[in-house]
Amino acid sequence: MTGDDPAEGTRPETACSFCPESADATQVISAIPSAVGWSARSMVHPNPLYHIEGEPGRRGDGIYDRMSSVGAHEVLVENPRHDRHLWNASDDEIGQFLRLAAERIMDLKRDPRIKYVSLFKDYGPSAGQEFSHPTSQITATMFVPRRVLYELRAGREYFVGKERCVFCDIINQEERQAARVIEARGDYVAIGPYAPRVPYETWILPRNHEASFERTGLSKPGLRVNLAALLRRTLQRVRVVTEGFHLVLHTSPNSLHPSNTLGYWKTIDDDYHWHIEILPVLATKARSYTFKEVYYSPVSSETAVKQLREAKIDG
Ligand SMILES: [Zn+2]
Ligand SMILES: [Zn+2]
Ligand SMILES: [Zn+2]
Image (cartoon, rainbow, N blue to C red):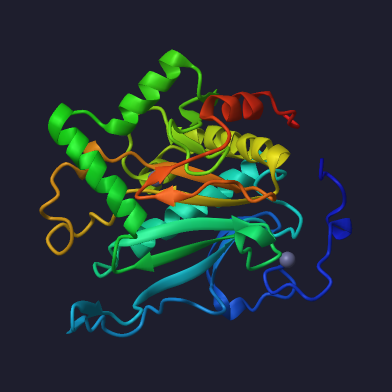
């Protein structure tokens, strides 16, 4: 649908600092090379939340732990073109972006101070989108974000009781019942979770057990193609319902340095299962609210999945 001349692509009104011709090359961290220069690249966030320099300096302040904002904050430019998004780029282009994401996470995890690397994307004004260029962001932090920590602990508890991965069990059950499977593509599957936090919430997971996205992303290029296609098609489906969304990758925490970080956590490779969560932002404010992790959604998961599965997409 966007096979037109690049020069005629949607141009931003003001100079975009992520378009190839105007970007500040000194801010580039790494790039996936291509025939036209690069296909995806990471840059320093112009207004970073975390900085890699300095010592963490954790110190007590009353009951609180104070920590200076040591870490990293990068912008992943998904595509050189200003109008090529994860739902209208080619599978190969999306695959290159996934490769970059895996490489950056792997690289940031080499720093033993880093406990977690988050990849996320906010799209649409209602989702708090920051840049008009197709971008995602990465933060590397000295703490594990609360939502991930909750998942990790729940995963470990389930594993201790059943000696199985809870996500594998969910996938098996969903594929058997088929009521909440949106689409399966090769080794990946998109499902509507049993208890969505927002209407049309969608998860993409590898069907076979894998704790770390970056390991899959780097070692199996063939799988990347299926994941790229499933991500593209799923975002097209979501965009039939609403334009804005949050996307977040949940992968295992930094276990490269077991002695300093997760030495006590012996089963992390068996009890966690990476996935992508897509949380659509509905224009009309959904009557979805939280009460101690209990979510009420006005659209049932099965209805939402049926609608997403039947959504007309480009192919
Ligand atoms: Zn741009
Ligand atoms: Zn699993
Ligand atoms: Zn998650």
